Length: 251
Image 1 (cartoon, rainbow, N blue to C red):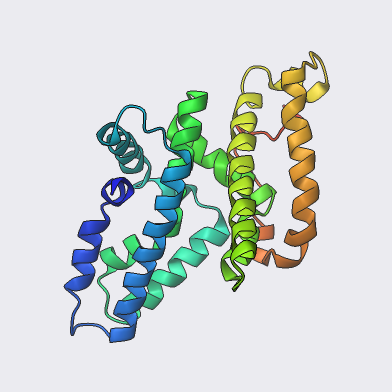
Image 2: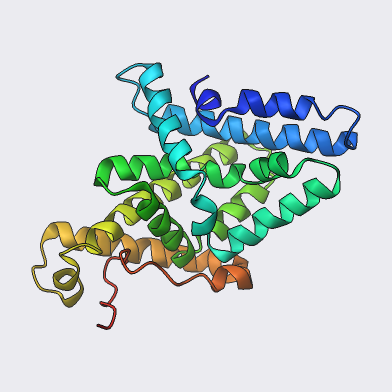
């Protein structure tokens, strides 16, 4: 199972197994559930997005390398609401007797699940992973994508076709997130001034702006009601990551 290997989930399950009779049973089940949810979501992502043309070993190695590079530093790049959420999980797990290192690793699984998207963006743009990660989180904060995902995960849907529709909507949102991040990285480069002032308005420069306005209009429908104060406070973004159509920062 490629993504299981890429994230080292076999080792993670073994460490949870070792907690038998050391932590409350329900807490141990919660840890297994966190790993299982991460694995299932990752399998869906892998089947939908990874290029299998060079064989599974190549794919696994590529994503494992990206995860290994970004995982140790990603916490310092997190927006406030994600950092707070992760810290809360760590506190809950350790209060029940889970070792700190294991608690941190499991609490970060939702964040680690974002890294393959960042690897794809880095592959397509040629940008370093840490810069991609900073811009990815900035885009998420700007469009309140985290709050939309939280609402989607909390929905209880029994009808099969409704679940299919929800899954498609989430995939569309994820794809837009990747495309806008790539566009923001591109505009944050040497062509930023021309793109922001309206000079050199090529079709290529205008597409990301239309995409941004479209997604921005959609997110106002749900995010206005669902964004927490912590999420609303994360509108700042790195200087090298500007959203299509936004004004240039002051000199």
